[in-house]
Image (cartoon, rainbow, N blue to C red):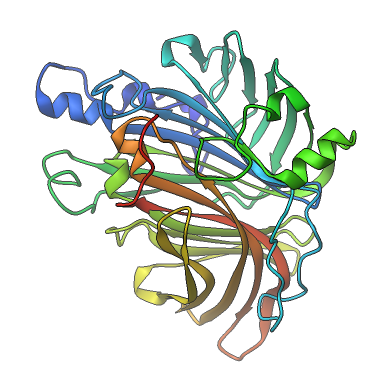
Length: 411
């Protein structure tokens, strides 16, 4: 990895997957499994009333190992709520209304890795195209990107994402995944790189009716879906959404992991106006990758505090059985953390979830990712009880992901 790909605190701009597996014999079962477990994603979130969702790129199993069990290629995802209803003023509001029937949307497209060009124009860039879709991502360092995605059936997304100066979080690596397919025989490791815990996002999204026609009307039956509320808007001509100065979040994470065995539960609540953010990361089985970062401004200077696993208490205060995911998922999270004379208290209420489900190969069929849309209240205080930073009713996002026994049969 060249110096131009890494900034002063270790954030990466370039794609890392070509160098994740050491060169050498590739015919052994261990080498094949390591290549099948290579994953790298770039996760750009937008939290605006026009579009509250995510644009995601994920390289999975790039050398096409175990193709009957695992997908391979660059997966592109656009998912979120369009024209989001007003959110409650507080995560602890007694009658915080769920987003029961929002105009929600989930669209995915899988490119073969060989059809993509990585880092060609600059570290972090990628272009790809086929008969259905084309994408172009240009990075200006780790924290700034311009994205364009166009599908001929009727999707055009443009996104400009700029991380706020001074807020980048140090990249964090974990090697403590349990079991032989963890850090033992497989040698699993994972790096969470977050150069933009709080960003400013401008963009637009246009949808056409032909794109929506083949999509399911609800999550679970197909990888992509568009709700009846969204279809009604598009049919009425309300098919274009724009946002300026919206809060955003960006994460670039990568490694070698048996994905269905190692899930995660994470949360982000960026506030671009006040230059502050809270980011919770938890990966199942790992202590190194269980932590909470808070960024805030104090006396005109950027401040940052990390609470590690030993100083962090996360509970699902309320949860429900999800009929689509087939698991229990949190509705209310409660987080308390204390270290270095600082104390953080956070409550997160999940108002809506967008399942990201694939029903092809076994490895993805029995694994789910659930995008979460909600609000968060949090307060950071010092040892004297002085409030250093806080938020109430802050729009937030996050994900819950792990293995599931219940899954739809492949078509």
